[in-house]
Image (tube, rainbow, N blue to C red; front, side, top):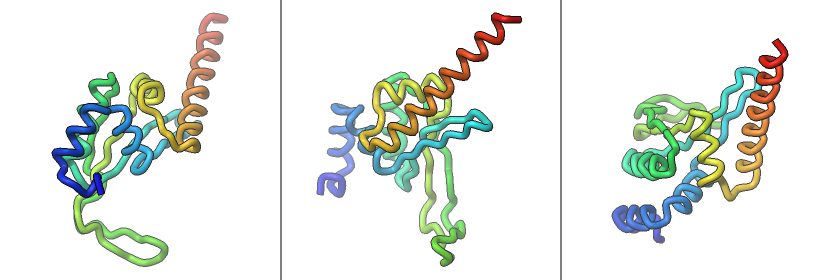
Length: 142
């Protein structure tokens, strides 16, 4: 009921409890994308409400987490869901955290309460830390 109430009230609470708001938002809308081959890692969330994502971007910035908002799918774009074709009724936006330090700050300051998402993020960060140490050892041996 709270989420369906006036947006102003939701935003007011989000500003008082930014970590909790962001954790809840990313728990429900977010994902971790990690690719060992290309050594890429990102945390992102999609939503139709650009105003909500803009608030998230501002809250993240206050926690020293850089993010960027993109138009992910334009209204009218066809999408195949379980073999049936649909169209997006509205523009779908995505907020993405790409910079490694910002992803690390997200892990430390916000994180996920959903264990599988938090575990995936932790594993990815550990992979990059191990990779960084291996590179440093290789560079020192030259």
